[in-house]
Every structure is written in structure tokens, then in C-alpha cells.
Image (cartoon, rainbow, N blue to C red; front, side, top):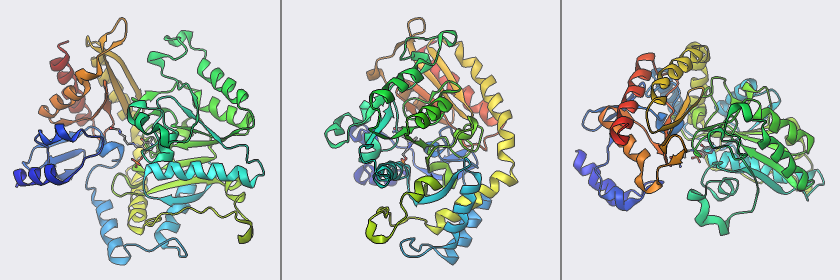
Length: 449
Ligand code: LLP
């Protein structure tokens, strides 16, 4: 029963990103079922999954078509290695990914989570320049408030001190550029009218001052996720692509969170019509079902690794569960659903509904900023709207709002003072209303305004 499960959990599970002392004193919700946009606990209570199982879910929980594809695959082949062999599901998926990816990304390197997908991209870019005879191009440009995962290479290119500070001595140094954060503009131009995209000018200055030493730049296209769902101004991504071209820097796009329809287009890079040299995918790739990731590369990147074995140009990297057929079968079923549900075609309406609905929040006394990109939205809570003074982090206002939301049947997870809205893309109009109504009441109750 629930109490036994809670006891065993508190005794044996060490939860991610969790102060376990607090957890042990809490009564954790035990999820046992999922259905569409909803997750259901061991006592039968239903919660709208406002964060899509940590930003992964696309077609809803327990979609029949995906369940069936998974069941069919498990009876044929559960796993076989890509080290020395290939398998049919991995082959077909690679071809499908190349077809839908930004044009030019035709090579697929599989792994099993977002961090590894980014690490693979970083290692590829590093080794690429060795083969090009430019080993001095060995450094990486990363952005403030970036998040690319928790393994050491991914942490090295991240920019969130709260998560990464303690590991600093273990990380490789990067060149950090200011990321656009329009609500708190790093260039001090806090109004759209004053914006001259000086963050791009600054990026160019950084590239010039490190001319010839930079292998790659790592970016979350359109939205920085864990940094606080920070939406980039239109044209920024395209500008970054142009600067990378001009300075001969490989652009590594981390679409782990924003890929697979999340921003309204299949890939965020597509919205600005650009192709990165390397692109990391995970999360939505299996619609939130299975751990699978892929790092896509252009022919040009791939070709640099070709040679006789003795030339040592091989990419010596690979994970045990690379190209897992169960994950690939589910990913294929998800891509089929994108088509049969005409999901991308339905998104503009949902995005507009969400936008309309969020307008109600802007009036609340402690809502400083409401930002949205496709089916990602964020509400930044502040103590004082006029000065944008944040709540002290010790007050845990975000956590308290999200706990309150559970009493309204909505599950949310904050990033500090930022409330994240990241529902399954299959969410209905009624569910969008339910989600935002629950959030509005919760903000009101917790902040008193
Ligand atoms: N890249 C991006 C853009 C991501 O958002 C993530 C994970 C990764 C890479 C790494 O993927 P993974 O290795 O986890 O499969 N710490 C935050 C949430 C992070 C969410 C996941 N993003 C929190 O405490 O809520």
C-alpha cells in the first residue's frame, strides 16, 4: 500500500536534485498510472502533468499506438548492440530523423540521455579540428544560465552556478558569453524598443578576442530551459549561426528540451531556418517513453573522421544501450503519431489558447514576467514588480506555489522563482484552462496578490 511504498522510498531511493533530509520528512506522492495529460497516484488522485514528465511527454501518457509498438518490438528484439552490428529499428529511425532534421544533418550517433547527446557533440567538435589539422581550435563558447545536463562535460558547458559551482575544479574551462534574458537584460536594455541585440555584438567581440582557438559553441536554441525557460529574442539564433560561420566555429545545438514540436516547429532551429553543425536530441525523441538520445551531424563533420584505421581518426565513443531497438521502435511510433494526429498543424491554436489564458496572470501583483515560446511558458514571480526585485531564494516561493497547485489537481515543478508550464503537446483546450486556472489560484494563495 501507499504507506509501505513511501517507507521503502524514504529508506532506499536517493532522489535527483533533492535535499533528502526534507524528502524524508515529507509524504511523497506515489504515481502509479498515466492517462493522456494526467498522472494518477496510488490513492486514485489525478494530477494534470504540467511539466510533461520533466519535459519529455508529447502525445500524452500511455498512448495506445505507442504502447502497441513497444509491445510488438519487445516480442521481436529487446536489445542488440550497434558495436559491430546494426539493427532494423535503429536504421529506419536514423533515416527518418535525417529526413525531418534541419537540412544537412544526415548522420545519427545514438546514445541514451540528453547529457550524453551533448557530450558526444562536444567531443565530436573537439576531435573534428584535430583531423582538420587545427588542434589549436580546442575551446568552447558556452552561455550564462545554460544547462546541458549533469555529466562533467555537459556541466562544463553549462552556466548555472547553483547546480555546477561545487564541481568547478573537475570541469574544463569554457569561454562564457552573455545569454539574452530580455526581462533582465545583461546589456541593460530592458525594453524591446531599446534592444539592439547587443548580446550578439558582445558574442562577436568574444569570438574575435579568441580568434583561432574556438572549436565549438553550445546553445539551447530559442529557449534556455533549466536556466528559467528564458526565451531568446527573434533573430538571435540566426545571428549566432552567422557568427559561427564567420569565425569558423562549429555550432552545437542542444534541442534536448526544445526538439520534437515543443516550440511549434519540429525543431527550434527550423523556426529560424538554420542548420547547426551538430544537434543533440533526447527527451521528446521517444515522446517521453524511453531513454534514447541522438547526436546528429553534417556530412562535413562526419567526413573529417574518415580514414584508414591506423590514421586514428575513429570516434572512440559509444554506450552500451546505443540504438536500443525498444527506444527506436517507440521513437518511430511517435513520429507516426506526429503525422496521423497532424500534431504540428494543431499546435498554433493551442499555443494561442495558452497565450490568451496566460494574460490573466500578468495582472497578479507578484508576477514580474510571463514568457512563452510555443508550448513552453514561464511565470517569473518577483517581490516587487516595479523594481523586479526577486523573492529571496530561501523563501522558496516557486516550490510553495507548485505544492499549492497540487491541491488544485495540477502537478508543476518550478525553477527557483520561475513557474514552468511545459505540458504534453497533446493537451486539450479544456486542460490548458484547468492548468492555468489552478496555477493562478495557487499564485494568489501563496503570494497574497
Ligand atoms: N540539455 C537540455 C537542454 C536539458 O534540458 C537537459 C535536461 C539535458 C540536456 C540533459 O538531459 P538528461 O541527461 O537529463 O537526459 N535540474 C532541473 C531540471 C533539469 C531537467 C532536465 N533537462 C530541475 O531540477 O528541475
